[in-house]
Length: 68
Image: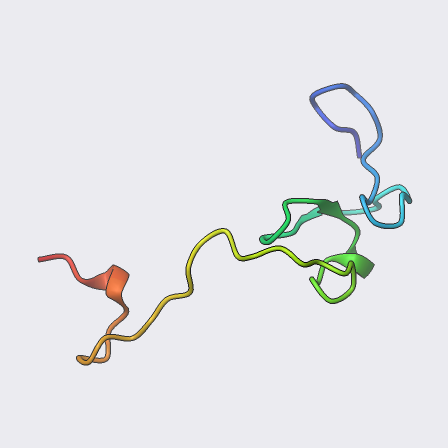
């Protein structure tokens, strides 16, 4: 699979091996990873989530669902 930006082969940012199949992007650090290293624990990710977790309000709905 080639990167559309510079026509280079996509490589895992952790192990530097060519990515066969779909590349994964970490939601915490934004690195491009292979299927072996896609989980934060597998690539020693120390980043924070890019978006806050969804929280239930007292009415049992997620705060993002409230549209008054």
